[in-house]
Length: 117
Image (cartoon, rainbow, N blue to C red; front, side):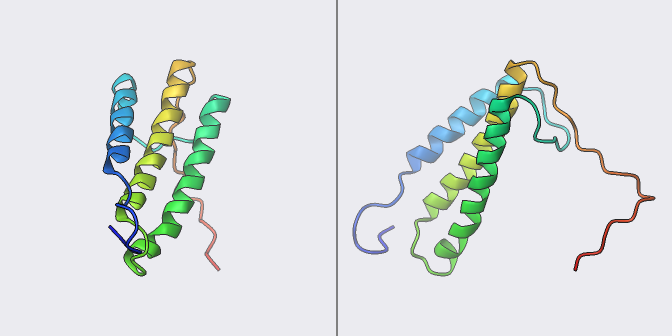
């Protein structure tokens, strides 16, 4: 990838390294069978905040990769994996500190949701 003729693009090894860290932490965790709420230890909460910021950055990079083609697709892939890393790190921190994961439970179907404006 050379949008401006300088440099060789974003190194895929960075993505692979994140994948390795994600896999190592995931091995220690119980299987995820439903959505969980972002709760637990302070450090885990900070990981969840970092994850949301990373997802926001990812959404902003998509048009640069897809439409403008001014950003290396590997940078977008890295942001995607980084947000996954933050999610798994939050789970791992809570697991190590003994905080239980709270599963998301949908409210009763009797309750109507507000309409979007």
